[in-house]
Amino acid sequence: MAKSPGHPVFNALRGGLIGMAEAVPGISGGTVALITGVYEKLIGGAGQITSAVRLAVSDVPRGRGTARAREALRQADWSVLAPLLVGMVVALGLGAKLLAPIVEDHPQFAYAAFFGLVLASLYVPYTNSGQRWRPGHYVLALVVAVGAFFLTGMPPGDVSPTTPMVFLAGAVAICALVLPGASGSFILLALGLYEPTIDAVNDRDLGYLGAFALGCLVGLALFVKLLKWLLANFHHMTLVVMTGLMAGSLRALWPWQNDDREVLEPSGSVGLTVAIALLGMLAVISVLVVERRSGGGTGGGTGGTGAPPGSEPPPRRRGGRHARTRSMSSVQD
Image (cartoon, rainbow, N blue to C red):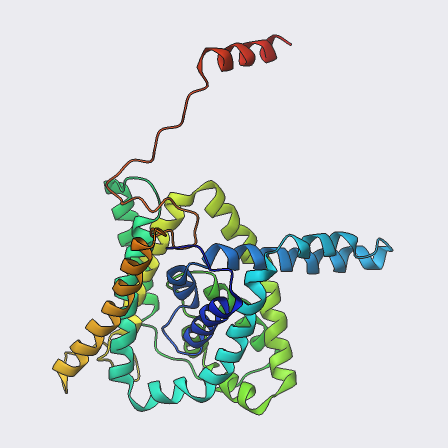
């Protein structure tokens, strides 16, 4: 998918879509970031922010000042991140008040739209690795998809939130923001903390929100570095796993399921439900077609080449005779 436009309005809208996604159980903010082309910006920015916090906590008590922390913050692309974060925060608050009730009142139609969106979005990580998918890659994606399928079928929990539990829930749920296919709200729902968290946002419960935010910060610090390293060193395999996660997470978005997340047969307004799912697919396909025609390809913001799975990446240019001579000279030195 195309690179993010420099205009802050577009990036704020992207952040708004991510925030709205995180407010709804089953919808992955990481998936939306991947679709809208800001995934790597989000991962990189989160890594720089957590590095800055870690450096500040380490350096300030030792009298080293905040120079290294400020340098880490300067390395982030704030022209994209600032409007992105503003849009996310605003949309998350609005989603808690507006979108979540719609899902509660009309779950079949809402999840049909989400199902279509995510199903069509599988094209993004599938084509973005820049390498040929081999049989082993399909097997790995299938194994991951099966695991995600069963995990997203877990019945919702029901617990009384304590501060340590809220902290741990934040640390786990924030990982879903940077992991396509995983839904932070779904994790909270499985832990029995979705409604308490929504209530805390609406009621501005600063104690609850503070513990949750601290958990999010710790979770980002531990997980984002790992994910950045995987994308840098195992880009293709990481996207294979992401494809499997997204495919398996479709289980949580099946329009016909009961409160215990048991999959049911289609019933009641089946035609309308299918039509809504197709409209969701069409929305994603339209975005992909427009950006491909505009020359953006399907990079998805993850640094890929946008080549289809059946094509090989372009061969590297060899250094030639002079390069080999320089290499031999350096060895002799």
